[in-house]
Image (cartoon, rainbow, N blue to C red; front, side):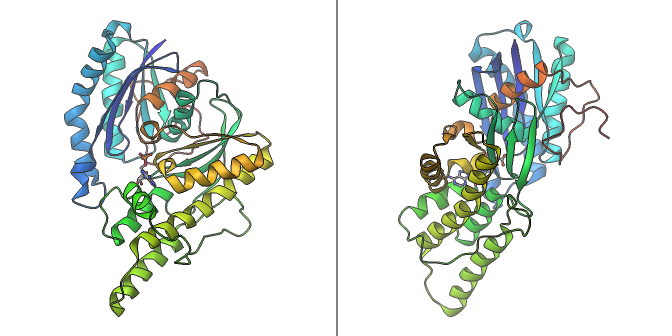
Length: 342
Ligand code: KG4
């Protein structure tokens, strides 16, 4: 079954062709990062306009590179939530038009379910059940993946997403947007013990996290150093920050693995590219005898191949959308199908 998959939830326009869930024929990504960098964050209106400009060309290029014709497409899949509403609407409307013209089913996909599915593409042997930590610019969730479409949230951030915290900290350090990679690179020469930074806890909710206190602590440190005219050791602040984020994420994900007894842990989303987080997970999983799955960098960020992969399993579970499909800025990952949503 050949699925044409569309992703436009934030600042990447992406189109992929995926056969039977796991074979990626082509994976086209246009990143808008350079358009937003000057503003220090994604500007929703600019994101929507850019999606409109490139999406058709990207789809044509996908077909050409995969060497398939429109008649070969069996279904169209699209991210319909969560994300920037104007950006999502571009992909949703493109997908609706494509499904209508091709007279094939339309499959709506939750963006974070797609991030989880990136692991199936990277590891053909991976099957549920497993625990997945999804860490991206907009989401930080610990999920029990009981089946391909049976996904339960155990906990997540109560305020900022981990990636958002990376991006804001980068701005304070004068680094470009998106800030995760520059902080990661800067941190490699720093002392991770130099700055004591808070690791947020939520009383009574062992899986929940909070990153707003960490963000404020970094802002205050930079502000105080500036006022006193003291030099800030940026590499050490970046290293201490990465340690604090990792100390929020790793113990909670390992707790979930222990409590659910799955023995498999997957990490997904753009922040999974972070070298400190990756190496802390490698050490924790090796010590606990847990198999760790982290997709390669290209599959960690937003892409449409992961949407095409998850769409295949949604399709098998009977999920379909009509030409009245809408887009939603927020949606629980546990919602299967999108019927009856206002
Ligand atoms: O998954 P993604 O590409 O988009 C969303 O769905 O949000 O994640 C983007 C986030 C950004 O916040 C970016 O700063 C962060 O992933 N990121 C990183 C690294 N590379 C990207 N964060 C930490 N370390 C990295 N190496």
